[in-house]
Length: 228
Image (cartoon, rainbow, N blue to C red; front, side, top):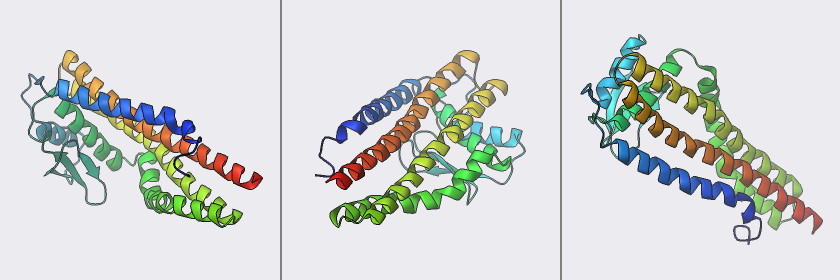
């Protein structure tokens, strides 16, 4: 009943937005993955050039399996680009690679939101995994302190999702500025890359909204349990 009662209506708008965001990012990436940059640079070359322009020489660029599995690992100082991005010269691939390079630049420059997110990540991971089981046990056994612990734990996931937003938006802003400013893409091509990154950003907005509304839902369920 926890997952299928009327309170699901609370998170429904976020779920709809999440589905739309996934379709949007997939469609936009596929569209601009067929448009190739006149510079002829591959995504890996563009990422390497952006790192060099910012004086970063200790970050490796590696290929990783999968589609859109691109990410920057600050612990190992590795920028990983997916099979569909690494050696592609498409506008979409350069946008994604530049975005991940933006995270590496954030790391090198001590960008505060990224540092806060890195510190908070393990706490949020533990909290999000423990939140629902603790919350449910609290409801089942009518033990309010356990319900409260579950709510607090889930709050960590919400905070993490909110911290992620400025980190991702800033990385995309750095990516667009680098692609245009360093001449890797023309103005028209940069506009296409920006559309890809904007679509990707929407997935983070949807994730944050889902977390917020799910927390609201948990509070509603907790309040209903107290009344019962």
